[in-house]
Amino acid sequence: MENYYIHFAKQLEKIDKEEKKKLLLHACCCPCSSHCLEVLSQHNFEITIFFYNPNIDEKEEYMKRYEELIRFTKEADFAHNVKIIDGGYDPEVFFDMAKGLEDLPERGKRCYLCYEMRLKKTFEYAKENGYDYFSTTLSISPYKNAQWLNEIGKKLEESENQSLQGGMNESGNNSSVRFLYSDFKKKNGYKRSIELSEEYNLYRQNYCGCIFSKQERERKEEIKKNG
Image (cartoon, rainbow, N blue to C red; front, side, top):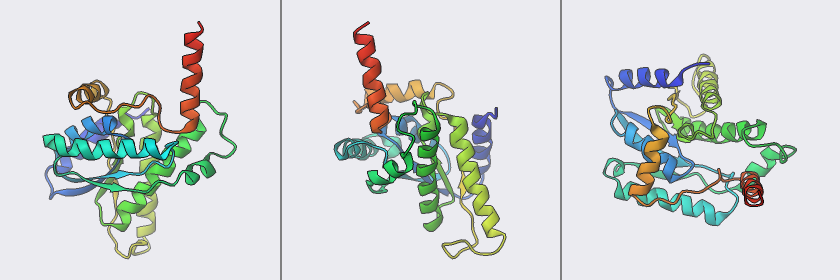
């Protein structure tokens, strides 16, 4: 199993010696973003958050998470220069992807495809809009598979490099966007995100966002309640 945190540290060391790089950071929610932004703001990046989460079960929940991100970037000193882009709420994209996988448990194939769907959209936006790097905050969660996330990001970057061997990419240039490896939960990252959530009184949801995750959480709580 690869240690992607080491890859991340080596990338940062190299990036900090270069000109400032444009980073498109996929975000699932504000608590997960908090420590990621705290770390990345110390390095040579111009950061834009890409909030793309069609998996979120209700528009109200979607907006609550999005608005918390906006509030946090205004209140946290290290996040003042961070821009936020709303990738658009389209739950049908998620449900189409999840067809036939509705009854699978969390952390299975449905989750892998959901990671892939969101990272691919982030990658495409980064490629079309001249970003140097793309990444995601998802790896800060102990409930998310960081190996999968980094493998997907690596695969997307490699597919872009292969297409560039024949000339320009789809956006009409011959520069590639690279994946920034990460495992933000390392070095007590998840613990720090909880501390920041308390410091800024952030809304912390108790499920990943999709209806299937919500239902599984409710079943577990019911079982716990009834002994």
